[in-house]
Image (cartoon, rainbow, N blue to C red; front, side):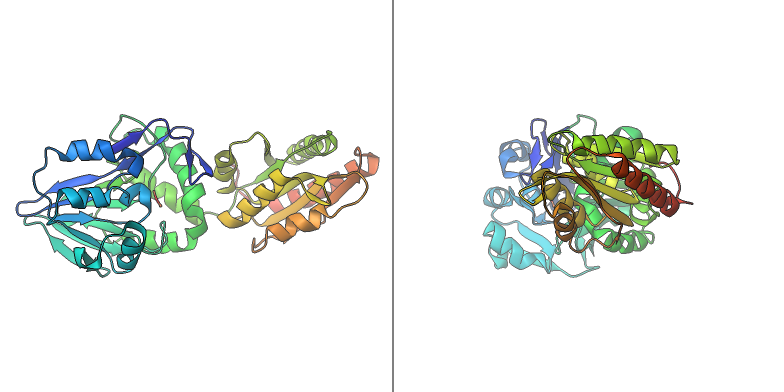
Length: 381
Ligand code: FEO
């Protein structure tokens, strides 16, 4: 159940959704009790409520995650079924009261590992904090070996195909989702993946995108994204106002390619931020390219550097290159914006005005250093 949001193009007023998204809900008809897992974004409440018209009775509304794209229609569902109880993790209880205005006496708190019987079916609740908020839990339908995961293993993809049988079609959307939503929590995800190894899982039902009826590929993909070493890949997020920085970036791309290093550059005034985020999953080095604007980096590089740090990728190395008109501290300020990013910063290369012979020599030296640091890293994404 739920809704396909074909037209939505932005999430959290930040994350691009080039292929829309879906808000999946799952109705479980047990032999004695009924349950609905998750709801839909408030913008799509009508679609969900229309589907519920054919369902006369609901015992449990399971809220796996309080973010409104999944729980936002819960008040309407509870209004329709006044005897239904909300089931949620212990941490979710105050959040449901705060964000949705649902009173605590309608909520049944589930500790990690607690079970709930629907008669012939047993639901086991697995606390999975930080995928994507601290209260998130997964629901395992034991008899059917079905795991419901809300944001985890999801993809922002509007499609009328229920199942992700062709993993390759969904993989790009799932990787984008991992990069934007899950990557900051990679360390915790490793723990969740380890724990899930103890479960026999035949199907995974996320609350965004298609259902994984052959779940091996998405489990494998998450394992690689969260565990693998970074690849032999340099990202160059850059912008340029009067071509000085662009000339340096072009030179740097060729210099790195000549040394066997793969590069992906992103003109940040034009690039979909999600494209940049996807490549951050694999990259070993980032080279920020920026002109100087009012003594600091260009605003599009302010955003890129802040986002890079916030997503906590596996990057090992970073450097700032760019240009200035008369003075400035664009390199230092870019580095400051990256704050907690755990990387080894290399010496910046800046030019006053157009790049000159010595600028290109400095870029050659930088390319040598990056190539040396990338030695032994695997190629490919
Ligand atoms: Fe799809 Fe964190 O909500």
